[in-house]
Length: 276
Image (tube, rainbow, N blue to C red; front, side, top):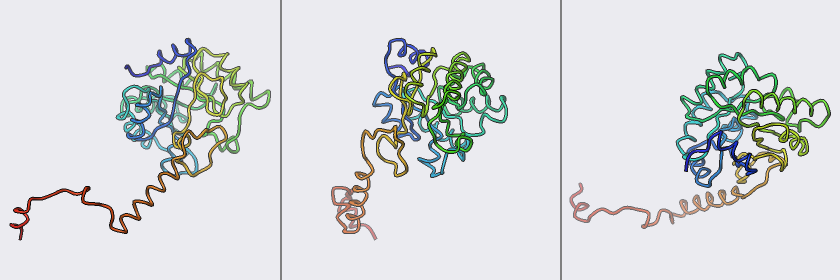
């Protein structure tokens, strides 16, 4: 099976086949996601909260992202890996944005990058595309703009902001992105946007009419103790299972019942006898 590509994703949209996407931040998790046949893996800057314990994504650096992207790529064979460009990695200048996008491909081994923003990022998107690097757009609730938005809020609920999101999506489409993430956008607005563009839309809190869906893997597996957004469905609840296993381990270690003989290795008696 060949690795998922931008052409494959476009073909899925044309055939009206839904696209699956999840985040992953390490080798072992990425290998499981890949084995399950998920189409795309986003090495999201959400690792700031999920893996590094930050309050938001703003403290995540390029070094953090490259480190985790390399691990995810090593764990995949079929899924398309998208590197999430972190805060300030594409804001200072177009030249710096292209250089950082190139690091995701050259150092990280990703097949594409994602960056937040609409019409205000078109020059940056085009420059990265000119460097032969596929770009995924991201509009709606863009977490790197959380301070500007005044918190994590649904976007596009009034006429002005809804029209802006449609214009942003069309501008990204015309610029040449291969897909667009719609985050925390009203369902019917996401449907309008999906109908207005030629590339796949990937929803997260944007309803059922997007061409695909993405979730943070720790949320959908029930492994994260923090706030779980309304749009998340827990496909498993692993937190109590993991905690129970950890407590069992602690108990058996303290009681001396683990490790048992079956967990150890043997040495020949004649060797033992010759030891000092």
